[in-house]
Image (spheres, helix red, strand yellow):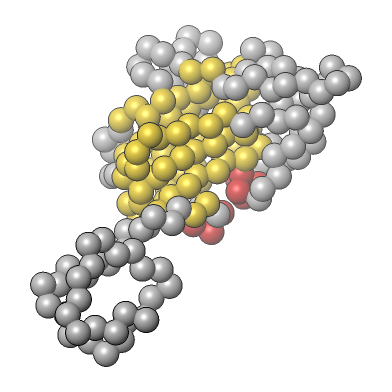
Length: 193
């Protein structure tokens, strides 16, 4: 399925191990400019431990190609974060960062007046190739101004698993589908109009 789609609030269940300030549905509403409503998900402990995270349950194992994090951008701060993924919610692997390494978000760019109004800058996480997971965890370790973790928006490009017909011989009058990907097609006496 070569057609990635953006995950919506209806596609996921978002939880946190800390209290969340705000409605998690705003993470998927497309509003990420400065002045939009962000959510907060806990404060950094100050010791670098992974104790504040948002967990995104995609409700089934999906292929993920990209994640874009829109951190709060009302000033020039950057955030420290990590991302882990899992198929079962128990066994986790690092996608971004490592046990000892926190990654810095992209720094917002100031406008001509030197302020950060409407200049939220995305932190894009390109996967390089598709990987499979059901759960994503975004860990926050505060920012360069305070200990808070704040997100405007979370964009996840995913692909669901589709049924694959692998037939050495399929006899049919018609096939109806929204999307078809064909690899190595050969036909004998076929009308392929």
